[in-house]
Length: 624
Image (cartoon, rainbow, N blue to C red; front, side, top):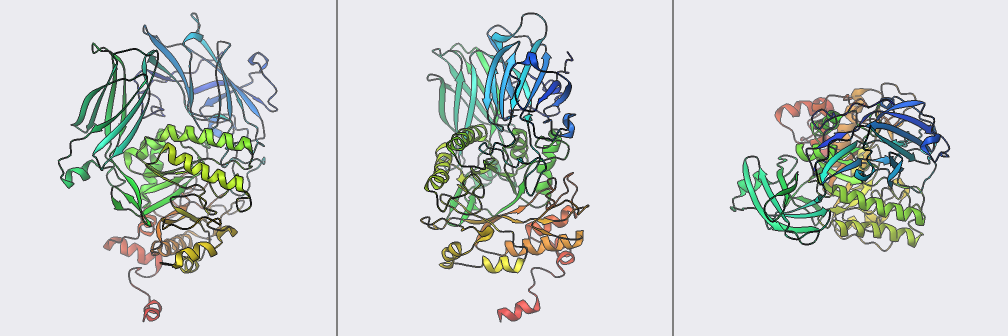
């Protein structure tokens, strides 16, 4: 059996897989594994598998980077590799982690079951200490089951037809995020949750412990910003957890407060070190983490960041790469995506139909990018759908709840999985239940029960409208005051009502959360978009005109343009799928932001044919 090369923390091209709970002793198991496809999912024992291929983990077998490149309809696959167990100090355990395996996973180590897991977008792990072999290499086997025709599971944009059609793409089967080993103390810190409270100038910490409970334990916490220590204290452990509010010295000086607050313009993180100690001071476990001081709220019809109205300029980001599918080629690719979004003038992304790799959230935290997190959709409504959706959405929220970059949760998109909302009380109750479940797990952020239309429970009225005519967009949403409620009842973008009967507008912020979708491709054959531009200059001018129209509407608290990059046949990105801009980044940024320096004014004039700050003659005549 071939042995894949081990990667250490410093040599792994993907970075630490769980960036808000780091330990030093870990090993990546990414690399070459033995592999086999089980087309009908009939093999139940690894002894019966014909290991006839290899695969490059963590890329799914549908992708070129996997080395397999099988995009057909198959229901299962198998993985096998060996590894040498790292040395275990006395009283330590070995954990085996999987970032994500789509859709059901069964894991064996040395012929014994280690763990089973259902859910294609959420992590899981097993304590494999007692399964280790005393002699020779450890043999790890993974079975992934993923019926491509099952529409009752959260699947996102994965097509149920063999060839991608419309807005759906090739499937993702099996392992698609990092597999890794972690050496941990038997008594350890299992999870941390951070909750900033700028009004009280405090950071809330909840820490869960794993291991046999004992008396006299303490958790020591040190918070620092750069070289400045903000807090350093110890807290007694009650049972298997602690919950504390950690006060940060507040001199009451705005300059100091603003320096410490996190925002896209100033992404200041607070570094944390957490030690679990015995009463005599002996350190049992030590982890590093981070948080940030920032607040999110809604004030009337505006979104508020750190106490001030903050217009949201988002771009829809589906998180696919030509060679890697849902898996970024490496950590630099994730960082580069964050850089590109910011370079195009956006301050956030709506991660669409994907629970993104935590490394993307790490870079968004560190570089300053707002994120809307959205649950991949099911496409049928049933009891099984409800059970899967609620369980896996809960897991996703709890995985990502401490990331400062996340400002909004979206459990359902465009009534997918609940297609009969106007006529089905049960489906309406699911929308409401998902909204309230989200707010129960995290009351500090905004939640949108159903993004796009047919709102039944939401903090933000989220509208999807792909009308290609800027004048029609401007006229449709020019309402103010009492006219807003009437507009929300009468308009039908996507041929759907914006609010369901019985749900009244209550002065929530209104956003255009999908619009644009202008297709422009190098090769126009076999591509799709909501509208089309024939050349780069036309594409740039149409983008500028549409953004100018949307930005000028007082109704909107923000917008989300479709989309960041081309995704296979859907060629309506601002970038090609290889992340090459379709017109210069500085021009995209001018059109997106709409705030013009003298240099930017020249760019705007060149794009639009006039200075957008100066009304055209016919506009002046209309006002007079």
